Length: 205
Image (tube, rainbow, N blue to C red; front, side):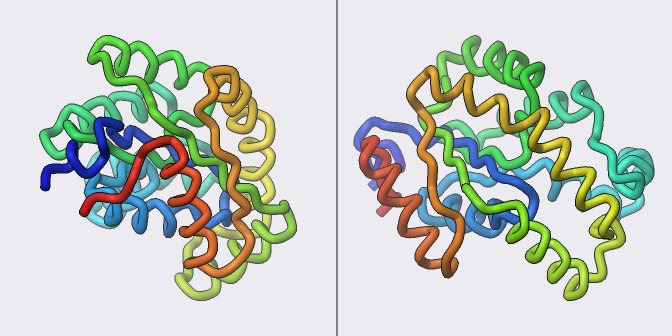
């Protein structure tokens, strides 16, 4: 069975949004596996470059260590290139982009040109104190230098002021599914699948 058949004609062109610590990265991987689509995480791309010591990685490391976000132009270029690859032709899951209204416009222009608008936006809702608790735990477990108390607070504030407003744009289009992000990984994943299934987007066989 092809992916198109598995989806019943509804291609999973998805975006997952949530504050740092909401679990969107973990859920994104599970969604990608279940629906047979690539998870396009800007954070993963950036961290891979940092680890490999590439020219991009050195630039990104300085930005991340300061608790700032990578510039829109650089992020957009990377995303457009990734979505143009063959494995994204039948769908994709975006994680970490778009993160502000300017990037929404850039993504819209790219997808409209291809006649492939987003089919659903998954909003993982998690209280701020829970996000902070999860990030602090992750920092301890993974030794991530960018997860210190000051940068955590800064990134959550940026999310609340810049990223959260893009949800209003997608709500107007009727494609946002708000999912409770508190619970076990399986519980949250089941809520996501149920929301997508209601839109006619079902896991690949």
